[in-house]
Image 1 (tube, protein in one colour):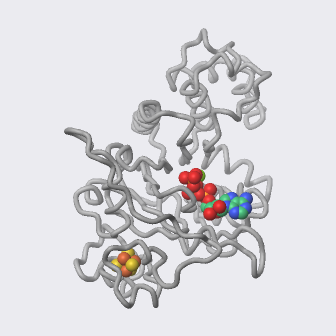
Image 2: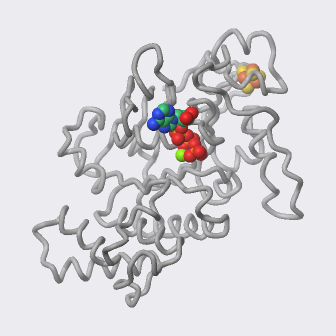
Length: 335
Ligand code: ATP
Ligand code: SF4
Ligand code: MG
């Protein structure tokens, strides 16, 4: 499948100079046409920062300190999102790559009806359309995300969290973007709700053919619904593979730990094993592989040199990449 969004060697810092916190480091990741790519990692690993960086929505003091994000429009030449002007960027965000934020369900304006907010988006970006056409489109979008016409005139507080989340998805789809980035809230929505939302997004993807970058803590959800999964740790992607491959046979010790942290997909619930230790402090990152203080397989090289993401050379497989000295990946870095 052809690429739609190619993140290349992206670096994001919070702050400048000596005190800068390196929240995203050297991330290279490709989202392909029509696929669901899942991004998982513990809290603070840089998932949201990566999503904001890609769409250039970083709150201050966030800055992109390196890398590029190449977008492939349906018709026309690929371009670097990092070099778009502010006005082109606004268009890009709704019409090409839209994002549903981590706190999205609470970002609806409480004083306006759901229908008004959806119509506002349509009006701002498609001023040439008639009010009747926008009205019809708004109804169609809400229907698409499973909200019946009678709920259109509701205010946000009259809807459940799940419904508000659906409204946000409807808005994100309003201008038929090629890419939807969804940063899932972890505390606000329960697992059952997250599951329904992701299932719905996958179904819509099949009908409308957009690509999804889905961010969540819940790896079991990704195993079930995504095509590929990328695992983030300490600001870096440490493994990327097809969902089934990752589930069956993860290569990175951190992925393995994460998979063990979740109950089995089928069968009786297991005790959560978890990963001993805590995520690294970005202000004092461990040397070499930042996972080495927690890694059960760490050896001398691990604290001395940073393993880069690459195809494993110990067990070559072009469909997956990992950043771990056990697999000697630096010999074949990801293109
Ligand atoms: P979660 O799963 O909790 O949403 P995350 O993987 O999305 O976590 P980010 O929110 O991207 O993680 O944060 C990555 C790192 O950047 C964290 O260590 C966080 O403390 C730091 N960070 C985030 N926002 C800021 C900010 N505005 N200023 C300074 N540091 C920040
Ligand atoms: Fe563990 Fe070393 Fe691999 Fe890091 S590089 S995950 S410390 S074995
Ligand atoms: Mg986040």
